[in-house]
Length: 312
Image (tube, rainbow, N blue to C red; front, side, top):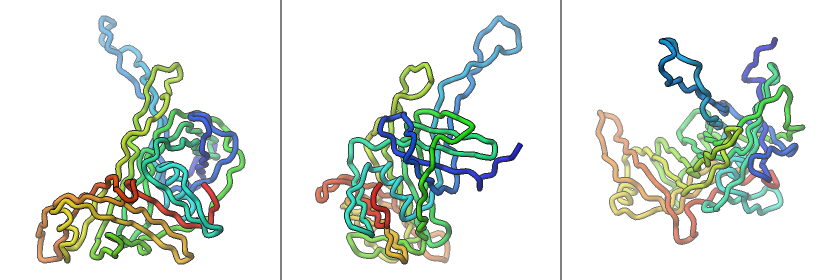
């Protein structure tokens, strides 16, 4: 019997036309660095008395399915996660293509994701998958990855793949050194670290069903928030925080081939931070920030992805 290795695993994704029904075709192989996507069913200890000192057999509890995927921030695969976060984009251009994702949509698409382990063999199909959160961190160096936090309806396993023949993507990966941050359209300097999290705040519909699965995951109020750590060389952000006035922050990357990704938070409110002095080195200040609905444009955020993929 072969032992499964992570390098031999595959992850295939397709959008569903009906929630909870995995399509028979149309899958795409997705790059990923780590996954704990799975289904869990805990045991409940027996509470019954009068049967002696040794416990009776435990009872199975409800099934929960979902988990986190660590994914590269790249010019093509990222579009699948942006669609899962915001809904379908508006696409313009003839190559390169510009895909514009807007926040505020009432419904987000569901996905089917199959995690394949061919050496066992073990193929786990997760249907009714929705993206709860998409987050990443900007810094000076290291590998640039994001985290997709998912909620699934359930898991079905098989010894062969049910994803057909998946298509592949061109991997054009962004790097930390290609990143930039702007405030109101002007470059924001002295940033040491930035964290960005977009959440759909999904509410699982945990109805009573014979199969133990959920009925769905309803979208709650969206949120966009994070944290910025800066070397204290200017009071620009501090002045915004003290005044309580919003500013526009844009977090972006541009690859040498012209591919790019920019997430713009149109109305950002900054918390008022302390300015700690922790030694003889440079003084750093950390701002928590939160996005909100703007007046023009009338939305919280816009994500723009430019690549050679015609549609999502």
